[in-house]
Each structure stands twice: as C-alpha cells, then as structure tokens.
Length: 118
Image 1 (spheres, one colour):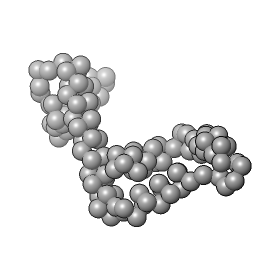
Image 2: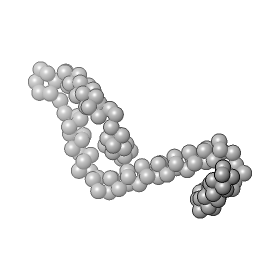
Image 3: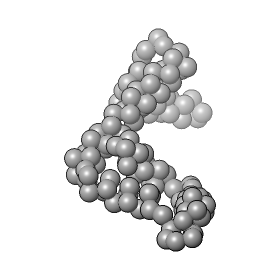
Image 4: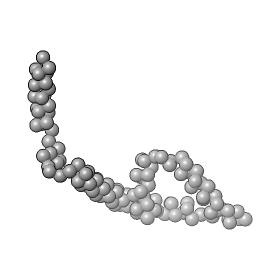
C-alpha cells in the first residue's frame, strides 16, 4: 500500500523536476557560490536601474526642479530670525525623516534625485 503511494509520489516529483529548469539547474556549483553569483547579478541590476532612473529624471525634470529645491533649501528667515534658519531647517528635516523613515518607496524615489544633484 505504501509502495504504491511512494511510486506515484516519485513519479509526480520526477515530472515536476523535469519541468522546472532554473538558472543553475544541474550545475556543480555549491549553493553558496550560486548565492554569491545571484547577489552580484541583483546588485548590478539594481545599480543599472538606479542609473537609468537618474538619467530619466534628469532629462524630464532638469533645471526646473533643481532651481526650486535650491531656492527652498537656501532661503533664510527674514530679519532678526535669520540666524535661526539652520535650526529650523534641522527641525523640519528631522520631522520629515520621522514621517518617511521606513518608506522604501520614498527612499527609492529620493536616491535618484540625490544622484542627479538635487
């Protein structure tokens, strides 16, 4: 009874293995080597994607966004409060950081903007 189920299970497993060929199927490389290769490939793809995003953002936004960010970041408070500008900027930056700290979407959007020098 157990033999029949085992035979059927072996047949099903054998059929699935034949259909599922992946990048390193049948390779003599160790799992650690395959993992290192896949990590390197993933990092190259990530860097290429970020560089392409920087290039696309630079061509689309260009000087418009850069000028707006520079005006906002380099402004001073009026009158006697001028010396408080860096402290206010620090508090605003800390507040924004707390709001978006764990957002990977924000990080992946901000990285190319930093890359283009904004």
